[in-house]
Length: 237
Ligand code: NDP
Image 1 (tube, rainbow, N blue to C red):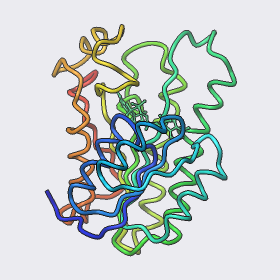
Image 2: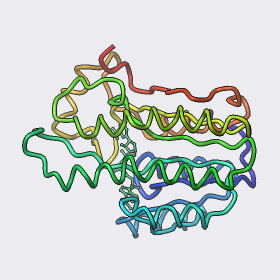
Image 3: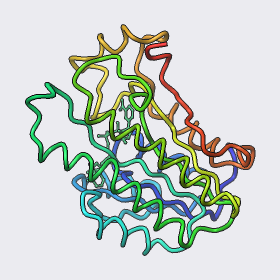
């Protein structure tokens, strides 16, 4: 693993799942880690005390909270935009307010967090956005709102990469397929349907996604920017 000793890293949504694994990887590599959470105060506290990372409560559904949390973190070397929610189900029955909240958390917050991070980010910094294979493909029903939000991350990633490239800052979107977390547990009712669309028929482990993020943040990835990096076991290929 690359040495991230002393690097200032912020992870949006680090209390559980993929974000928590990224917190642990960066902390183990010597980085100074700050992460946000909204509801999971106990989990956030536990990870903070185990890793030495700083936990900050900031609800991504509220622009002022997420923007202040990023601004308060100061000059970053790496920004990992991970916090997200999924709502799935019958398109005609989903509550409009729930869909709007998803768009606030999955689209508006990443935009504002990315821009706030860019204001003070050190040259040659890294921004990673956690998208989804559903940004490219939707091989199962009921995911329209979620897919919309993850396709938006592709435009955000390419736009930021173009705007920040002159400072040596790279911006990439990591697009997982099924990953075993609270959001999409391997024991969940849709696991079999998902595996049916995959070449490698299993959920990924959070550490597999975190390892890709670490590579993209490391010195060997300085020329990788504006890309989507899919880690999905071959969903819908
Ligand atoms: P989890 O539900 O396990 O964890 C979500 C994390 O995001 C938690 O730390 C949670 O914190 C945080 N979060 C959620 N809402 C907010 C909010 N309003 N404000 C601040 N933080 C928030 O999900 P995953 O780890 O599975 O997902 C992480 C990312 O990966 C998401 O963007 C998701 O869309 C994406 N992804 C996941 C896949 C999967 O199969 N698991 C597949 C493809 C993409 P708290 O509990 O404190 O609110």
